[in-house]
Every structure is written in C-alpha cells, then in structure tokens.
Length: 195
Image (tube, rainbow, N blue to C red; front, side, top):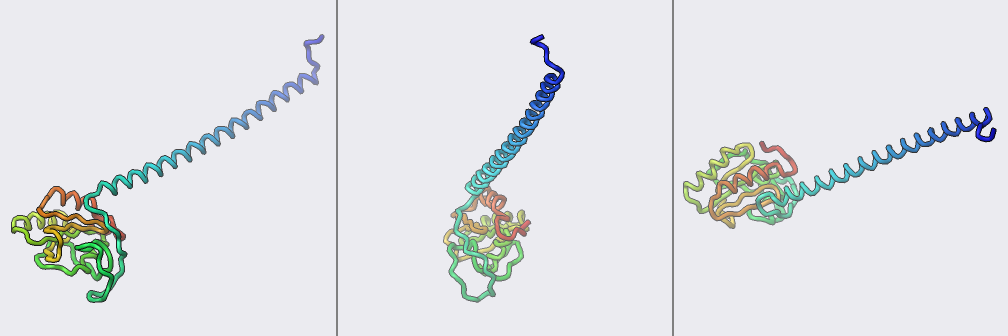
C-alpha cells in the first residue's frame, strides 16, 4: 500500500518529529532567556534614567542658589587660604567645627565652614530687630542638631542661610522659607553628620 509507511520509515518519522520538538524547545528556551535579559536591561536602564532625572529635579528644586564648591581643605585658623567664592562662605578651607547651636557672638567663618562640610546649615544675620533675631534663634533651636545661628556683620544681606555649595540671601525673616531650606539642604555635603 502506498499510504502506509514501513516500520523503519515510521520509526524515522517519529525520531524526526521528536528531534524537531527538541530543537523547537531549545529555540524557545533561548528566546525566553534573551527576552528576559532584554527586559532586565530595559528595566535597569529605565531605573537609572528615572533616578538621574529625579536627582536633577530634587537638586533644582532645593531652596537657595547653587554655587561652585571650593573643596574641603583642613587648615589651622589663621593659615592663609584661597578667598571664599561666596559671602558667607559655602565651602572651602576650614578649621575645627563649632558646636551646632545658637550664638549671640560672631563666629569665625573657617570654623563654621567645617559644620557645613558635616551637613549643617548656617543662618547668619545682621541689622535685625530683636523679634526677628528671636525667630531665627527659634529655628536654630528647633533644628539644633543641624544648624548654627549667629550674627555676622560681614554679610551682604540681612540674612544669609548657607549649606555646602548653596546660598540663600534674604532681607527679611521668612520662617517658612528658611525652615524649608534647612529641611531640604542639610546633609547634602561630603560628610553627612548633621541630625
């Protein structure tokens, strides 16, 4: 009969079908593996892109003007160093830090810059009424582990709020704006020690 296969042909046909199925399974496994790796690569790429974008938006949205960082050289008070690029300084050469807190006397810039390197915020002021000074000191007490509040007659503005590489100058006390600055800019520094 023409339509009937011999035993040998039937075995060969069965073997060929099994081989075809085996090759097909291997091919599907490879396709699944490649697809999975492509999905992983796309997911990682998307995550990296999103992280970079979120970091840029967070940086842009932080209060204060971003300024060039001058480095973090440790010096003894009185040693010569490059002049600071902002007034008050936001980075650069510095000596030993002061304790975070509220001060009624002027502090040495080089000391407070070390606090900025540790993630702190310096709120300095001049020519303010007593009630406005009290508002700044209240902010300092509310954020005592991360702020230094002190008078500073060399300021360009009545109030300067600085952190590592960032400066906010104000003519009047804006408690909400200063508080937001403190919350969003502390520990944005080489050594994140502020609390």
